[in-house]
Image (tube, rainbow, N blue to C red; front, side, top):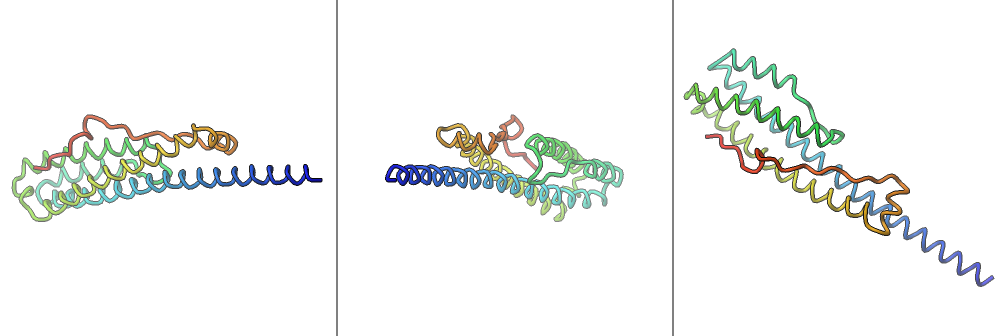
Length: 182
């Protein structure tokens, strides 16, 4: 009878350990999802700020503004459910539209000097910084999850409940330096 009691205690301890590890993995994974969501919010806000610049461009070059509006209409929308690759694609689309807008502003000094343009560019820069910070937080969260998924003994629970490694945002040449709006 005493052996059965000890076995019950051991099984209960193992079950509690498993539940604790599982809950930690869930918490870490939710931090990854939250960090990805923050990136999506900042990317979408940055696109909204860019639309303000396109609106300002209409006063100077309707053709350029219409072209840029068509490009932004075709952009990839991102959310928490988006893959890292989809977010990277949105980044590339954004960079292309922004570089085109900067070229238009160079051709129209009045546009570049306008308060609307300058305020919108400050907003774009602010959201650019927030995207960078959000990406760093995401990568930190992914590091914690990937480590927990691979380290023993949490890897046992991770494997049982299909916790998997998440991809990182990679640094590219374009992202090493802050864009210059001037």
